[in-house]
Every structure is written in structure tokens, then in C-alpha cells.
Length: 195
Image 1 (cartoon, helix red, strand yellow):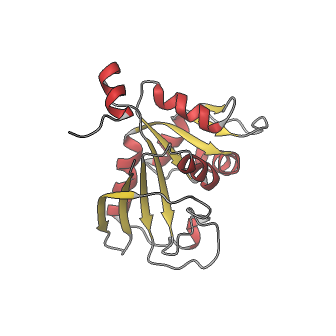
Image 2 (tube, helix red, strand yellow):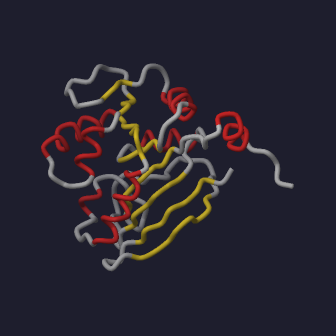
């Protein structure tokens, strides 16, 4: 018989599965996540559908301050769908120690520490919790064992320079949920974080 997990206990007490933290990233083949517009130049329907499937399950997003500032300037005027409609309306929780200078619908500063906040958010009822474009936030949550899945789109390009998503992390074992190659050669791979 398999040992009982925290997931099993939570599901039995509440009658529902705990919320999942899912980090979604565009990466180069050498693991660079910073400025993906440098190495993602071609899109296809399968890559777009993968992103739409990801955000369809999420009703909250965690962002770092730098990502928030960049996105709050870009996305409110964007017509890139379905992500624009999603990110402009979903509750956004921002890890920052200073007040937000730019207003954006449903944006909230995280009160207290990031790790404790995400633990509490996971314990509340709701859908998936997304982490997008915030490398340091994702690293912190991976190191704290709070990320449940990684959804990656890997370009067939070596970026050479830029922040890599997994630098500085302890060993983490992943289990492949899905792996496919899009018509443009992007590897679409979803991993479950093994516990």
C-alpha cells in the first residue's frame, strides 16, 4: 500500500484537490528564460493551444516586481489573445517590498513573505496558481517545494546568454506528464515535481 501524502489528507478533509502551482516558461535549448523574444521568433497553432490550455486552469498569478512593471506597461493595451484577456483580469499577486507605481486591474502586493503567502494561497479553494516570467520567484518556490508542475516550451535555439531558469537550485526530480514537438520544432513538455 502506498504511503499517505499531504495531498491525500487535504483531499479527504476538504473533498477537493489542493490548488496546484504551475510555472509556465518559454526556454531556449540551453535553459535561458530571460527575454524569450530573442529566441522565439516563430509560432504555430500547437504552441498557442498549449498556452491557452495552461491559462484556462488558472485563477491567480504570482509575479515578481520586475515582471509586474514590464507587464503592467505592455498587457493592458495588448490584443494578443487569449493571454491579454486572461492576464488583464486575473488576480495578480506581486512579490515586492515597495508599493506598486503603476496600477493594473486586480493587482495586489503580497503581504509578508512569498513562501508563506503561496502556502496559504494553495490552501484556499480555487483553481491553478500560475507563475509566469518571474525567474527569481519560480526559483524561490521550487527551492521551497511549492511548485507542482512545470510547463515548458523549449525553442530549438541556443541563446548563449541570459538568466537560466534552473541555476542555483538544489536537485529536483521531475516526472514527465506530456512531451510533444510542435510543427515549428518547439518541444512542449510538462513535468510534475516528484515528491
